[in-house]
Image (cartoon, rainbow, N blue to C red; front, side, top):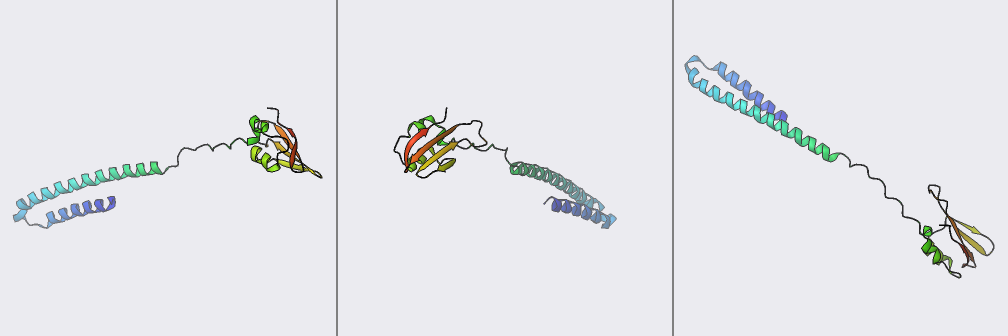
Amino acid sequence: MRRELAIYAAFLTFSVTCLAQSRDASTQSRDGRRLDALMMETEELKRVVADQARRIAELEKEVKALQTPPVSVSPIPAPTPAWLSPVNWSRIKKNMSDADVVEILGPPATVQSAVDTRTLLYTSDSHSTTTLNGSVTLTDDRVTMMTPPNF
């Protein structure tokens, strides 16, 4: 758009110059007034082109600012595992099923199995700053013993 307006302004200037040179002396007075009017119009077009170029530059700057990525947002921390709550450990009772324990404490980090006994081990992961450990022992899929973490 800017380029087209600049070309148009240059074409008008060139046309006015050519027109002025092609007229004979007898029509100089009348043509002089027309030439002055055309020159004024050309100057006005140049001002409009300059104003449009400034406005386009401002708009491009605003669009670029809107396209920049937002400030980095820190990731949402993972929720605290249910087994890290002392209240949840107090809900574990003898003779509860394996499914009931997992529903309350969440899935264990590891499971150790023997003939008819399974132990659900709850431990902190390698990224944790604490070293809490707890376990629930089940015999025939029923809670027989529980060792909560030392909170």
